[in-house]
Length: 114
Image 1: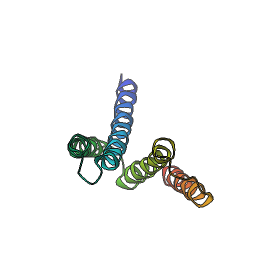
Image 2 (image 1 turned 120 degrees about the vertical axis):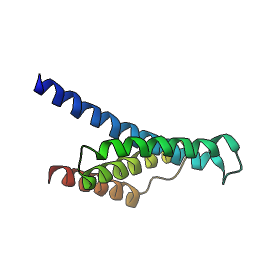
Image 3 (image 1 turned 90 degrees about the horizontal axis):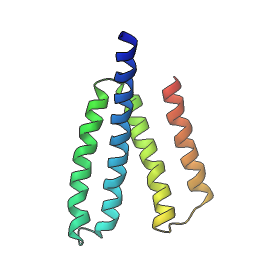
Image 4 (image 1 turned 180 degrees about the vertical axis):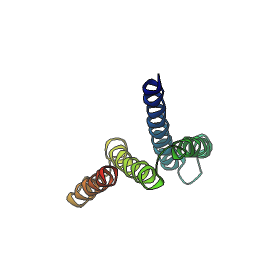
């Protein structure tokens, strides 16, 4: 019974963190789509996505260390935004960009394992 609760507790924390990351990425994407607040709908969604991202991030921080949560949130968010930038906004892929993203991933993994 206790083990089942711990697994559910841990699973919910992971879901909260994933939602925080995805909502933050949606907020950043909305910033790009807002065209400097010239397009109203994406401009409004920026605030909605960030509000919910911070709610889920706060729920995650109740259960995990801030250094790990923030590193995963910002690192995976950066990675996803870079992929969206390349795939949807046709941003260039450079060696420096790829190596830098790889270093972010290694750094996040190092924090998690440490």
